Amino acid sequence: MESDDAALLSRVARGDSGALTRLYQAHSGRLFGYLLRLAGDRMTAEEILQDTMLAVWRSASTYAGGSTVTTWLFGVARRQAYNRLRGTPPPSPSEPLDRADPAPGPDELAIAAAGGTPVASAIGELPDHHREVIGLVFVAGLPLAEVAAVLGVPLGTVKSRLHHARAAVARTLATQGVPE
Amino acid sequence: MNDMLVEYAAGSLGAADRARVEEHLAGCADCRADLAGWAVLAEAAGTAAAPPGPDLVRGALLRGALSEPEPVTRRPAWFSLSLALAEARLVRVSVLVASALVMALGVVMASMPPAYDGWAGDVLALVAPVVAAAGVAGVYGPRRDPAYEVVAATPTSPRLILLTRIALVFAYDLVLAFAATGVVAAAGADPSGVWELIAAWLGPMALLSALSLVLVVWVGPDVALGVAVVLWSLRVLAGGVLVDVGGVLDVVRAAWSTNPATGLLAAGLVAVAVVFAGRGEPLRRSRATHLS
Image 1 (spheres, chains in turn blue, orange):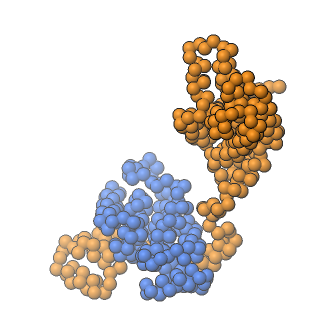
Image 2 (tube, chains in turn cyan, yellow):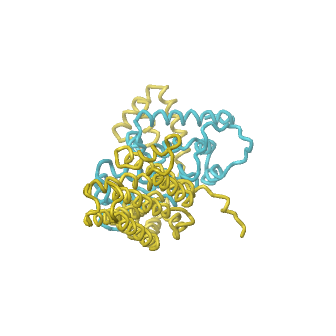
Image 3 (cartoon, one colour):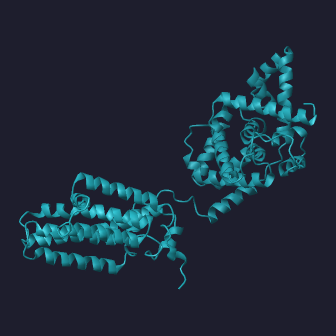
């Protein structure tokens, strides 16, 4: 699987667009899930995914085998996501939970439209770096060690972010009176 | 076991590890409760919609073919040369001609029968600095630069442009001054030799030009030229016509020589000017909104 990916990527580096499509089909589900969790709405996630494929097409030759192809792909996607989302400031972690306007925002509406639950909307309210870890661990299904490699942080940081995220979701649900 | 529970809930464990986790879970209520918490999170997070089809790749390839490849972040090796050539076209011919004429006048005066020892050196030390300072005063600012607004809109830093221009103008004035020194020395007007002659004007030329540069960037060309001319006049008067008040002329005379201090001071002033050059337009005088 991994050696297949590396072979595909080296064919992409030589300008084989069919290899790019196959690489996309192998990874699009996980990449899209991660980007959707990070961006919050489907259209932005699709745009970032396209940016990502273009960046892979142009920079496939820079892959040196220092990490797994999956880690490299998520790294590219993450960079593209931050390029595109840079204009939107991350939600402040200290934002009070009982906001003045209780109407659902665009994120919540998008999550609800995607068949969301109170837990999903609580995840949507997490700060960026927590949502990102959740996206990589639970949506993309990456092992924790690989998540640490993608984010460039120690394994312990990934674990603590996961626990903080879970605690924050539980707090949100408790204030809304929803049992976990 | 805690980390494996996360990966178990996320579905990213291998078959062997799954079996181990399940075996442990059967006998551990704490871990079952913990897993339930992760599972809720995994289920809620994992409700991702299906990704777009492979058409997206075609869209990305089309975009790649239509748009420029990644912007060139490294400048080509000949960038400095082409920048210098482009900037050379913006230097006014009248400035070059006037500089050459004044320098020629200086050569004629220096070659005349000397009034006293070191006459030729003194004449060059008066002519070369003021020529260079006047030239430098014309290199920057919205009023003197025909391409000021175009330059402001290009990605090339205004500091780099300023440095290129003063390098061009100063190099031209240096060549003129060296040529003048060569002519004066060849004419045998001064017995002290070429190096003495060069030392007479090099330091003052660098210092006065650097001072003029700071002022043109900070305030404007008129003030730069004015201050340069006033300092120059003080040096002329320091020749003995004026009575020294408060040691001003002594200071001017000391600065009017080639030594490490004048060199360092000139370099420092150029650095200040380059820093100022990135900070917008020179101070606006009242004339900015004049009605006429």
